[in-house]
Length: 180
Image (tube, rainbow, N blue to C red; front, side):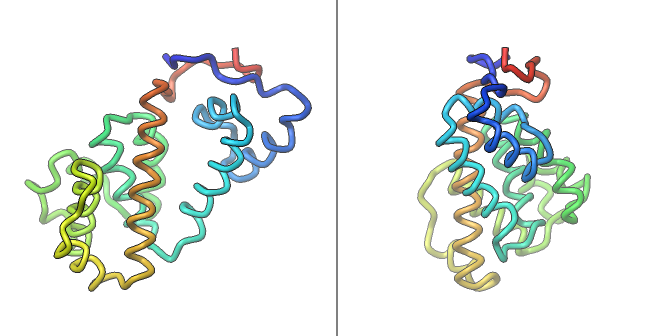
């Protein structure tokens, strides 16, 4: 159960942002209903995360691979619930998703690029600092732009999971349109 009640979505001044969230996400997910306590934060988050999810050159399979790994590492079940179906649509297999908690022990489930990407994700999420040889290994395979996009995606979804877990936002939380 979330630490705060979900925001009231009914005030008329919120309707343009509520409609934009629905247009871009399909509905006002729990995360966005919590963010609506601060409309400027919700609007900035939506714009930024829409760019990360839909406007980068980074492949959707790599994006979803790191999102799912971050969800595991940070104990963020909401993030995993939301992204598992997307990960499968982007080409990851159920076996790869299942292996993520102990991916290094099941490394053969992943391509060499995916293994390097997972190493980078683990280093950024667990230690923050990343060794130059690992960055260079990923850069050699992806190039500068996609490396920057990958690092930005990992950083962004660490932000998401930390927000979710700080406020204990979960997919099965009861809520109403009015947020009460």
